[in-house]
Image (cartoon, rainbow, N blue to C red; front, side, top):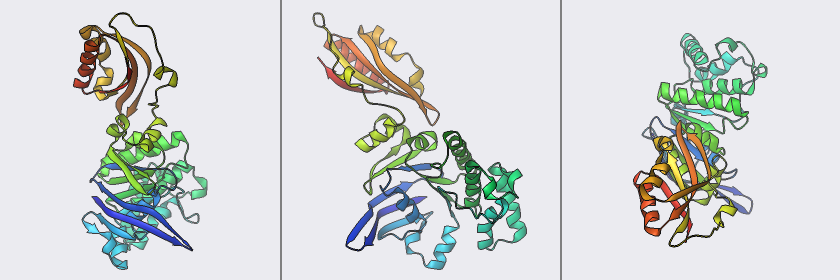
Length: 343
């Protein structure tokens, strides 16, 4: 649905050149919820604003639904933008218009007949759960209700792509969950492609199918959300994941030592569980099968897109061959096993 090829954006200021995006390439599939996460200043908001050409790229191509938007004339771009909805962090509602008229606004601009537009607005109000707020003004709404109006307005022209630029960052956690739930429902009902720009890994964890990590104007990692959580390949990805699921091993465990008998050795390992395996008794099965001892030292469990995800830090005790066999057994079950030290 979206192909970004070699995208570069440079801002020029007196005596300085700021490279906001540096040769960024991405592919977003039709119907998926794709997250782009990065720290402030990393380039993520510039990237999303380039997708709908609110920012003109310095170089590169952006293809949306088979159309190269970077090559369109001004009139062609205005038409193309009607199929790319945008949700803003601070709502951007017109205070002098009612909820109904705020949602009506893009339909007026598009020249949709009044009767047809009114019907569309009523459908959208029902979709976002605000049918009883049609004649209310934005100043009378909560933050979550304002964002629901913003979502309805973004959907007015039946876009194929919905861009969300930090849409939940101004909301409290409970309201954020409700808005994310609404976006997930919209994605499933309408099969609309959603691109989520955020600095909050909880947003990625909650609803995204895939995620790209942007750092210093470059994409440093792209992958399935479960894959990124279970095996982050870059320090910046690990830092983001640690804000949600702490994967760091406590320092005292890394330097833990104890006297060993005979040929027995000790290994400190971390086992990552994903999906159904999180509920299986794999550790007890391993202990029985390979005659090793396992001390559970540290662990946590969470849910990523409704699937169980967790880590266990174990101290395994046994002879070297048994320990190797035990760890291979875990790997054969599809679990990730990391070894931190061994004797």
